[in-house]
Image (cartoon, rainbow, N blue to C red; front, side, top):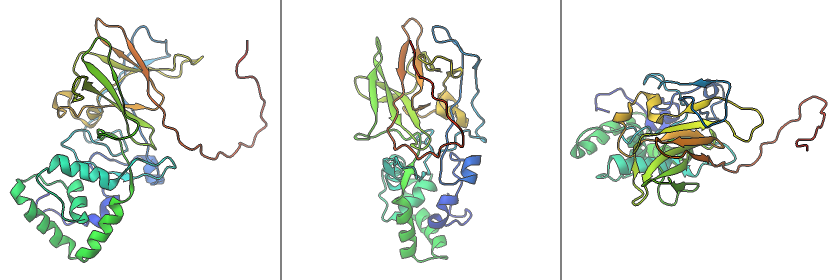
Length: 309
């Protein structure tokens, strides 16, 4: 943000501020403490259970994102995480995610206080490294018109210490619920890593098996989400998944190297289809969470056996 940009108050307006990759859904507008999710893409195929229909959803325009949770479509887009409120708490704080953004985007700079950390993770600096201090001084001058530096740092700390529920941030060593499995007859592996707890999101990317380095679509394939093959009645269409970045108007060939990811949901059944190879099937893990208290419906219940024969 140039020094001449419109004045903003980072500490007090962050929670209300619209990040270009975090647009509110109707549910967020009516119930701001809950985050939602969506998936996109589709195509029918063979050797998978028949379904009533099959669709092919194109990528959404860049100006009308379809995902309502904060996420990182590429390394060039910082994240503005929102607080998590579900009983199954998110594993990170906003501070954790902000520090990741700083390390990736500004490896030459160490924030001197929480206000600088919060500012740079939400109002990215795009100038030369030597100009970052002048940029911060300019932003701080606006800030000090409304509050003291001590108050700005205190408010930033309160935001940074909140739990964060987000989708799309690539995992780091030690992150929980990350799973890697080599693909048969391939030098690559599939990695599944968790996203939003509230949205029940998981992400998929590809790694070089020998190095663990993430790569973008390393071979020709179709990634399909299919109905539960054990369900007595098909539960939905066969969906061909596209990179999450495409839903935000980023062409596949413009995704930063190693940043590509596919958005899945907990419990989904998936097929990786490669020309000349057997299909690879897997099911997305489900994170355990406390069962919410449910009020019984005002109705009379008839109890039939669930399984017979």
